[in-house]
Every structure is written in structure tokens, then in C-alpha cells.
Image (cartoon, rainbow, N blue to C red):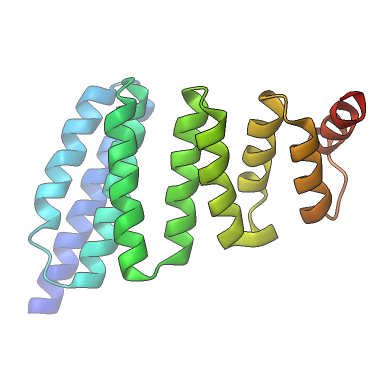
Length: 176
């Protein structure tokens, strides 16, 4: 009975988070954020630590996205930092990398290329060449800052295939 109840609670959290995601996609970020907060209230009643962690991580991520859509970047970063701390404590490397990636993108939105690069480099260091999106975002951040040589060196070391962004970095590095 207990295991089934926990499973139902986890399903309720996931369903509530999906409603919030739909609201977010419809441009109703404030309502989405409120829905995610309701889901977080349910999460605290889940007894299984693994299920609680997975649900909390998912809802926090979606809450951070909603906060970002509302222009509440400090709140969004705070939520991603919470996810990062939870993932590090759980030893969940993939989630650590995702949280670092999200934090890097938040700083990139705020035009803070130095901080963005720092978080993105940490994310790429965890994932290696496995995540093209993280590598692309890191190089994009460096190249938009005018750090062509840095972007090119990272691409040259990590990429085994030629891409348009790689070519832009190469051409930019050649001009500087």
C-alpha cells in the first residue's frame, strides 16, 4: 500500500508539472509558476527519497524556466543553484551538468560572458564531447564576446567535425 501511494503522489506531481508546462508554453508564466509551487507542496509528502529528488529536480527546473520568462533572473538563478546543490549531493553528474548549463545560459542572457563561460566550461568538462548543445553554447558565448581565439581553440580540441560555427570561429581567430 505504501509503495503504491508514493507512486500516486509522484504521478500527481508529474501531472501537475505538465499542466504548468502547458501554461508556460501558452505564455501564462505567472500561472505556470503558481502551478509549479503547488507541485512542490505535494513533493514534500513523497516518502521515497529517490522519487522526491527526481520530482523536485523536474519541478524546480520548470519553475526556473517560468521565472526566467517573467524576467525574474535572480529567482531563476537561485532555483538552478538549488538544483545544482541537490544534484551534487545526490552524485547525479548529468543533472549537475544540466544545472551548470542552465546557469551559464542565464548569465549569457544577461550578457555576462565571463560568468556564462565559467558555468558552461564546467558543464562541458562533465559531459565531454557527449553534449553538442553545451559545446555549441559555450562557443557561441565566447564568439559573441569576441573571444574568437578561445572559441576556436576549444572547438579544435573537442570537435571531430567541421561546423558553420567552427568556421566562423576559425575566420574570426584568423582576423585577430
